[in-house]
Length: 254
Picture 1 (cartoon, helix red, strand yellow):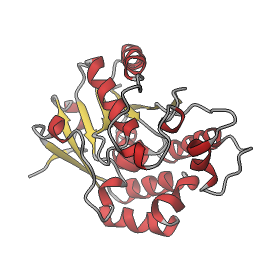
Picture 2 (tube, rainbow, N blue to C red):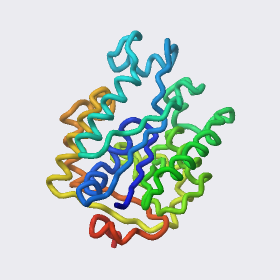
Picture 3 (spheres, rainbow, N blue to C red):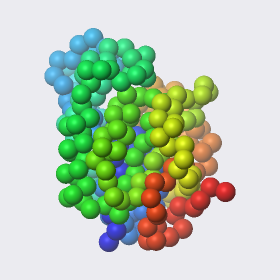
Picture 4 (cartoon, rainbow, N blue to C red):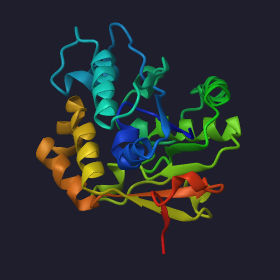
């Protein structure tokens, strides 16, 4: 059984960006491992870290990341995949980034998380022996996404990688930042298009992230509109050679 490994910075990125393909892989008999990097609960958050949950109507007594991990488990179940893995690394607001604009500026010089991420990724790859890796291009410029790309590069995997376009940054009105554009510019584009079943599964998975829908889309209706605009299409940059076992799930962009 071939194995696909989806490496998601946050609890929603993989489902938002390539949930249709992940569902398709599972239906085609692949073992699909979904791993989210930044999921640690932090007791008694303050300042900007606390505001990241109170601005969503969640009181300071609530374990925000525990709630989000439960949402992710429901989302991955909606894709008919095995339960996800959640790593205990802290999100950027708990690593010294103290405002929303800072999350999308250059990585802080004192953010030294990449070596630890690299070691964890190497261990994961050795354990799972993936035939295919899926990971973000860091479109939008979120520092957590950038650090995951850097760590995956440093881990030097031999498996082919489908680098996904980070939804919903790709569908906002303004042109998204692409701090790693040069890293991916020379790689060929490929796409995956889901049929009705895959689109429905992705829609259900994305809707499971209830704490994020108002902030990201203005509510469930906004999410549904954005997914409808996608038309079941997900795009990637391909590094390496696609496994033959992918069949017709992924096609070159003409």
